[in-house]
Length: 387
Image (cartoon, rainbow, N blue to C red; front, side, top):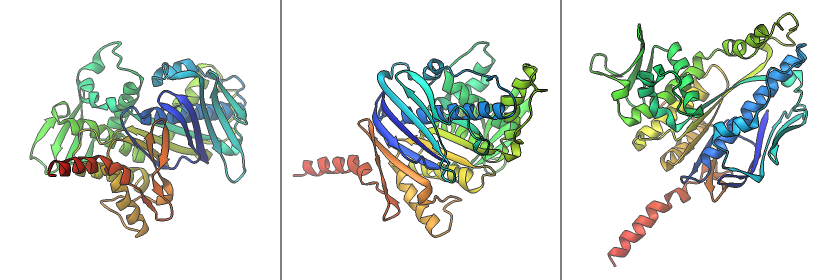
């Protein structure tokens, strides 16, 4: 399966084409350059493609009536794209299966969503069941929300916050504790009569313990990332998610007797897609690199299920660190549990509504020269004061 996306005139994005979305994709650029817009668009169209898969699975299984309608206006509102859409906005998403040559296209053109080719009915051999996770920058509200806000009836902090909080809540149902080696700490989850209690503990047992809500901003921003990644890496149940998405619908509509499964869940291709906004928030540079190690370890080294990762960042430290992890893969070794294959990686710098590929293909490294411009400018101005 190979994904591509072509976006024109969407908010800050002028014209971006990614022919092959890699398993690990990193976006870097200035604030407002369109990193989150691109990542949200990819996540949205992956989700729409997931829904096409579910609908196709049901049709192949003798359920002709679709369980849902595609409501693009709602999806665009959830993404915060309402003011980004122009008459000339185009989003063209495509999935291609190299072995058979089959392509499934989902397009948003002239304000309308449409499928071309075989998108309306995905072939049985290509049906897959995916999980889409989006870890937004609003995750830093989780400590206070889990302590106070979640009990407020009708409380709402936006689509992406509640998506990431739901994933955090599911992850904390499955895990009792999590080692935060990148911070030399431990995250503990304890179930009480009043709900779950979250705390940060020293890695050395008995040293100290504080409530999660009282921890530093770097801890509050990074713990949800690591916890959710650990959950999807080792604890997530596709069976439970499948039951919620498919079997519950059939049961609620009295369609179970008509349902003749064309494939068992074990025979369906499955993948998890994780999207993360600015993982480095409030972390010291060394901790940023260690968190990157933690993520790559969970998504590509110790994972029990296939995971693709996209993240947006402002951090040149993370991009520079990737070269070390590429070299580790070449030497077939690990750096603090992590490495990344050059061919599985894409790094794009977003500038003026377009993207520049930072990979130097004939050298198997990432070009970080442009990310040093600010430091060079500071040095030039410093030197000029001595003249």
